[in-house]
Image (cartoon, rainbow, N blue to C red; front, side, top):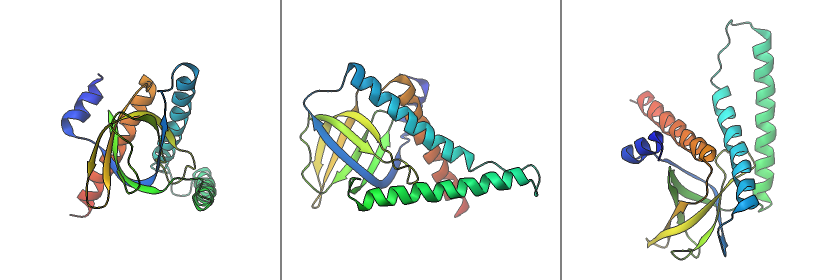
Amino acid sequence: MSDTIRMMALSGLAYEDTVPLGFRPLPAMPDGPDLQRLNAENAQVLQADSSLEEYRRVEPREDGEPLFQEIQRLEFKLDVVLRVIGSLLEHQKAVPARRKFRIYAQGLEWTETDVAPAVGTRGIVSLYVNRSLPFPIELPVEVTAVSAGQGERNVRVAFHGLSAHVADLLEKMIFRHHRRLVAEARQHR
């Protein structure tokens, strides 16, 4: 267990949101080349998410720097294109329904209004972590708990087979969102 995972587990760091989230049951966990492909694709999506988040914080060195202004203009156009693609996919029902979720270092939880998978079910959770990216991360999971609420069920899953690189990128994403929430809370005081 990495130091970051221990810190997150002890501090309870998690990222909560409402985004498109789907669950696809599988007879067995992916392994070999299938698991390697999932990890490679997840790493790409998480790195793209990170680069979009980090780039927005770049400040110009001088107020009139033309290169910086041109890059910002191109970034804005790219954001618009990505949002349009994401919106088109969502309207074509290619994207799963939006669900409230909470992700942490070892797993995630979501609120299910349809039929919840049974404890012990293995599968893939598709989670759209960035509204500007029309691609999900697809995490191999096993359902560890299902609890009933008012007209809905809370499903808890544990991750299986994540590469160290993907686990690290997930931890960093969770920390970025936690840091942003703390900063926003300070601004609203």
